[in-house]
Length: 226
Image (cartoon, rainbow, N blue to C red; front, side, top):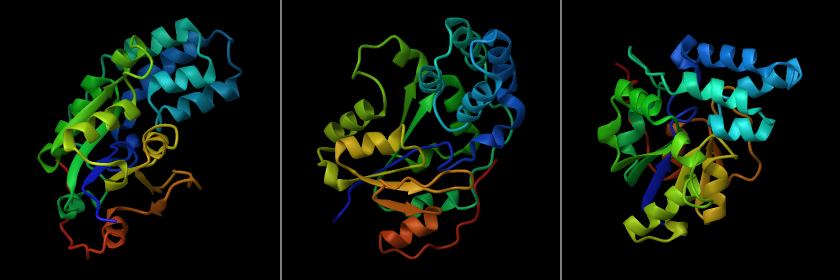
């Protein structure tokens, strides 16, 4: 199948989400303080762990955060910015060798996600960078936000069919689920700490394997980081 478009996720696809170090800890601590016994300690820590893999609004909904917990997390996350150097996975420099129309679509808080992309210096490698903003999604009408809605806009923009699109990422609850619903080909990047999803059309360990899947031989371009 001749693909035309490749849609990439950011966190745990091109960038280890934990590479921001202790940046998230103020939000995690605020959520713990606001919990007030609403969630058992083990469930609360499971929810906090999921914040490394899934957008905060989806975690809050999935685990039943109280309004106080949501507001405490929102207050901290909205203030976060990456201000120092940030390094992607070692194979991130292979991105320009993927000779399709490349899109970066990431969910999260707009300023935080923008600061990650700027710190990585990868914006020129994409035709478009689109952010599924948590704040906008929380107040939106159903179906107008979320990655599925973003992917549908990309199809319109590129005038292509779902079968001509690759969706590459780690998360079945986000980009992979949306790609499957769209009818696109899903490729899960099974990075360290990512659980394999049986419903993905393909699973790869990284971008080199993705290139080989597309019939290309990766040329070592070195890691990208500032």
